[in-house]
Image (cartoon, rainbow, N blue to C red; front, side, top):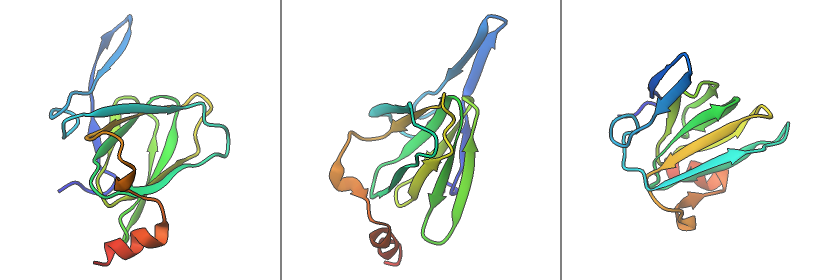
Length: 134
């Protein structure tokens, strides 16, 4: 069972020329990857996310910069500072999440186990809380 806010270590390679980080499906990322997207250019004070997914599994890592990821499973809330490209945070289904405190240079890369499906989103927090009580 994945723990709320669980971090996975990505494979780090490289030498004096620079770094190289590897994220492989079923090895570092514990699912098959169907979609990859990134968030960039987020202005100071802007918060993003504010939703949960019914079935989608995700892993998020900063490529550069930093941000805070807030995860809420309906009973516990954790804040994880993402500031290393060598780590990814796992976001399981049924976890409300949002990001804040983006540095101006932050690029947040997200791996997802399915294609975009609007019907998989829970965008209202009260609806999310009710779904956790079932």
